[in-house]
Length: 369
Image (cartoon, rainbow, N blue to C red):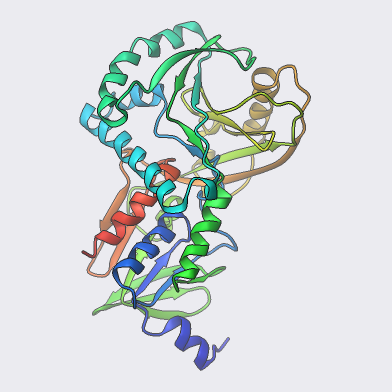
């Protein structure tokens, strides 16, 4: 297809910045670049009709780490590294709310709760609670974790769990919609259903080859997270997360965000429904994929836990199922770096995109400073 002079001139010629990925990182990066370069020509490429990554497919947890996750991280990271991870996630969540507004993303701080399969596991992590509260005190100024009774009627779990007083939840559809609106309002152009296949730096520009056409940009920012390995040699593995949601449940009393089995399962309330996801620990190898879809082993286990643990005495129907692709690695720290003179990347958010996506987008734009 031959594009017109008008189309080429308006969208593809004299591009200052091209960003790959219209998720939370890509959109935030574009908005931050706009602040610094008011007259710059900025284009975002998105391979999906909607953002293809995890930004609009996650569970909407405004979280920074459960007690068990933080304790387990201390086995592979120093105290300083873990402190910095949590601090960054908390600052990222505050930045997200400040940038978009609590009401615009339906932010609710209903606490987070971690459930344990048995008393021994509960007591193992409980024994470290005071130590972790002390570690995080400089960030939150008060204790984060406390013991809570099982007031929600969950079964087949220990009847006490760990409450996180600062955890919240958001509507990720509203978040993405607000970010897209802000980007377009600021003159940032977004093209959907276009895939960057390869790129090559040539003098002071980057040649881009897409499935629609080829063009040049002065600088390229890659924000594809779980799909990063398709374009980059960075150490980012895809991790698929399968999710389901029930139909509305009358008189649903469950309220908050919940972590089970070290966070490999997670659920929350949303519009009188239960949104429930996880289970990739059942088959890590199969879930290390960039292909969307569901598997029987995961879906059967989600339904079993939903019926036996979360809603044991409540009739429910599953209305919808989907999956999202996260970007993970051996390290929890995101990759934000300059790859060459004119190519940059912000990827490997480790399942914490809601918490750190805004910050990563800003840090990525700051690499030009």
